[in-house]
Image 1 (cartoon, rainbow, N blue to C red):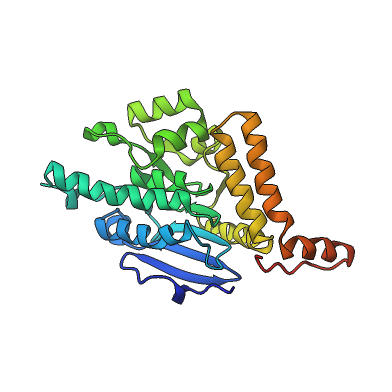
Image 2: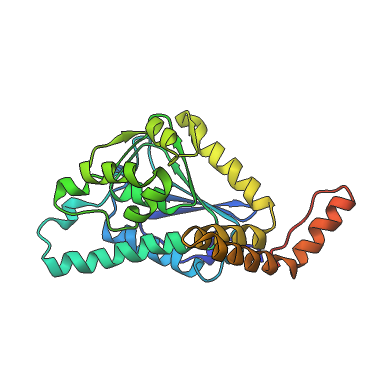
Length: 270
């Protein structure tokens, strides 16, 4: 199945760019407010990623970035939230949860290309992706405790898995921002790049992933995600279940045949 952006629902705040070969570039597109997350953006995130939690639809890798040169995402739009009742706040946050959890549950591999400031929900969205590339000028932060709330789009779980429990407590309890260099040193960011090289590098990695057998890549994602949260014995069982799901595919035959015939494989995702 060949995926195209026309197969996706219409978006109000996200720009969808089909880069070919099953690669989708998703851009948070509110540069005038540093791509802050308003309700419409979060509804777009939910509507885009929830279906991809069930069916990849032919997509092989997704890159998430922000519009403009200043910000990946400055976090929740507090101007929109000004004056909300407790009930309205909770109702909006249910949409935040749906969008962030849908990104985490997406079966398609996801790469965050953090091109600038990523605060609050911006850092949470980056952490919700499979891994992060960042511009060397990017800055991260989870300042929710300085606003009388706390993280609630997965960061209390994703951050400790990225930087360790003690480091995560410090970040989450102080609300202090940190640099891209620190994020890389702590293991949260995979690669640091000059700003102009960031998106090309993320797309190049996306192309490498997209060239591999899609079922195999998705099963790797499944095995790591579910195996990580259990003990090693259960993790091995999850790994074997994921492996066996690849054995019955046409792509497994194609991969072996291509190796023996000394040619590049042509994987079809089945």
